[in-house]
Length: 160
Image (cartoon, rainbow, N blue to C red; front, side, top):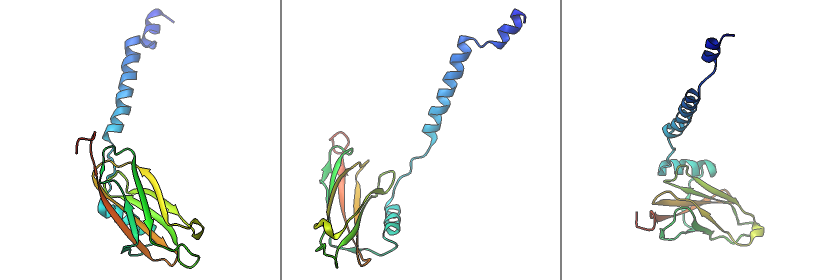
């Protein structure tokens, strides 16, 4: 093979860097162009309806404890308690927590039994912005009770 033909077949350093750079830009561009899903109150209601088998929730029996203001939306503590005797005949089967303004409405679901003794669950969750957090408790007889609380999520603790 002649030297001229060899030069046309071998990529130069600049051509390789250019190709790698264009590939990196293409990958970065796909991440930028994808739309983030944003939950809405309607989407949160639809998701809760799916979790509760379409049962209409009754307001009451469910208490949602959240701070009034979350200075750090990355770790927001939440406690949900349900007024239930937790006996074999009357207990909470599950507790579902949803957010109205996160990218996805689902936060977490807990399954409970009478052996728990107390219908109370706690966790930490991530919240992107000021919103209402809702909880639904599904009882052993199929009835559903709901509760909610508004929380203000600040940006950097500056009141956003």
